[in-house]
Amino acid sequence: MKDYDLIILGGGIIGLSVAREKALSDPDCNILIIEKEQKLGMHGSGRNSGVLHSGIYYPSDTLKAKFCAEGSMLMANYCEENNLPISRCGKVVLSTKFEDDSQIDLLYNRGCANGSLVNIISQKELREIEPEANARVQKALYSPNTSVVDPHLVLSNIQAELKKFGVTIIFNEKVIIADPDLSIIKTNKSNSFKYGHLINCTGQYSDIVSKVFNVGKEYTLLPFKGLYYGLNKNSNIKLNGLIYPVPDLNIPFLGIHSVKLVGGEIFFGPTATPAFGRENYYGIKGANIKDASSISYHILRQYISNKQGFRSYTHQEMHKFFKSEFLKSMQKLIPRLSNSDLVESRKVGIRAQLLDIKRNELVMDFIVKRVGNTTHVLNAVSPAFTSAFSFAKYILNK
Image (cartoon, rainbow, N blue to C red; front, side):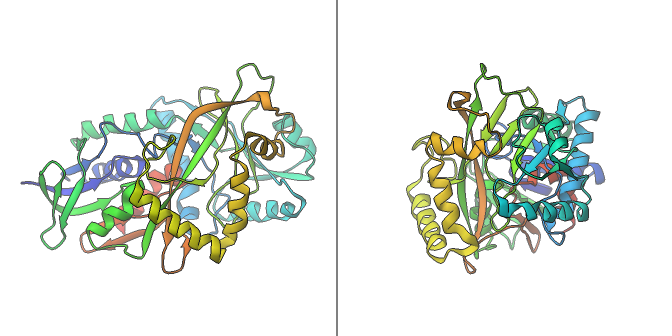
């Protein structure tokens, strides 16, 4: 049996960032990362669009607010220092209906409180920054520091760093049995490891893994599938940066928007519809009967109770199954967008959204639970990629 000072479960951006931070602060620490896939970036971290958010959406007393702005700066600096591509393209946020105009002021105030560089701009300024954006609004929000990076290159670069630091990463293994009293875990390949401390960063499986350690029984994970359309290469639509709507702040989704990747490709999305498995990216592939049953039950409870306005949100998302309705939503942001501009794409992700079973509410903030010598990161959803370097310090000191 091998003995490690620190074992990290999950090789996504949070797991890698925690390992990096620990290796930098304690070079003598013997660290093991256990990743269930054959390579990094196959799920949440790799399917991320790479947007470094500025921190305008989150109430100032939340962990997301605490780590987003600083994390964005740290990640942007990391990419520049390591010659990784970064597009400092900026983002505009528009109100798509009259009653949302007041939310622009709310987001501005939150951004300022959270240390974000953000400005309220006029119609004229909006036309100058993003000519294709809907300029019917009297004002919009502009986040000039919002950037886009390449998630896969970031993950690969951190992986190479960790190798130099002497961190061990093993692939194609996952924990199936744990004895918290003895600090021992056993994997699906019958390998046993002893840990001084263990951190669960398993993303889409964090709730399942935490329960192996008798932690987080009050939570379950609801996977939401995010589908995108791409911009037709023959389109005459030209975007300089990112265009987002004012979101419904009662729920943890930002609404469909435009994103321009570091390579220049433009996508529209994502939707946020329940998936029938934690890896149910395409069709029925990845669907799981047990998961589907649990997901359907909890989604129905949410719908009936209408907590956080979930019912009306569900109706809106159902309409977006149809391209014509999706297009109508996007035209509120980019009026000239037409049916021929939208092409189907293979870009899809799963949002690993945590549900508080007792309160029957979607969890809005990051959740980190420490029990004994184990720490469990249970709700590392957006802006987790943005916040990773800053968030990692908190996780280690929790």
